[in-house]
Length: 261
Image 1 (cartoon, rainbow, N blue to C red):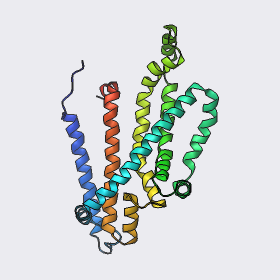
Image 2 (cartoon, one colour; image 1 turned 60 degrees about the horizontal axis):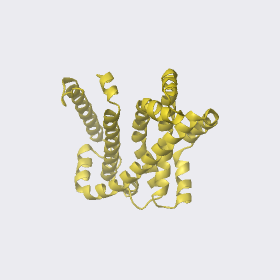
Image 3 (cartoon, rainbow, N blue to C red; image 1 turned 90 degrees about the vertical axis):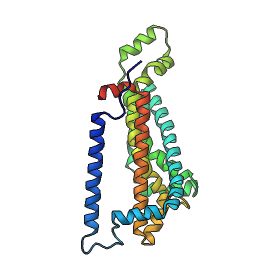
Image 4 (cartoon, rainbow, N blue to C red; image 1 turned 30 degrees about the horizontal axis):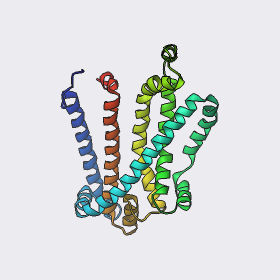
């Protein structure tokens, strides 16, 4: 059994202090720019005004954030299912990989502002278009990273387990997929960071609930502080998802934590 490291080591406290200092500098710069003569409150809300909007509209922001978070989590789960399945299929069948890779790249070259209305027309105004957009924007980094991870497995290790009696599927399950886990989490971290963007685009194209729709309505109503408050909540959501993925990686890939020390 490994020895657990203390929660607050000197290195971790140092990194936390650096993050706090950088955030403080960013807030100070934001406040300075907002207080400059000629900067209108309708175009740039100050940190204080944004905080007031966060407190005043906390119930509204929370209820809409739950809708957006649901779209993000379900869309991300769909992207994991499609991305991992596609990567495994490409790994097992070389002609499929040669044919599918250009299509994967092409799928990321289509602007979301073009795709979002098309998905709304196809799936109506429910949660379907949001899930499709989040899955589309997230499955690419997952599929590519898992495919690269499967290709990076030592072939001698696969041959060894095959000589011990394992069939192709057992070798995949016991050797190749566990070896590709770090690549999977690398792709999932990227996907978690951009999933919120996909959900917001989906809500802008057509929705009756959600934080993206709230930000759009507040912008049209010149409620600038509420717009900034919504953006802060969206950013916090992306950071929380990234942290959740990093925590899951520490659980399922403990050897990476040892290497990072």
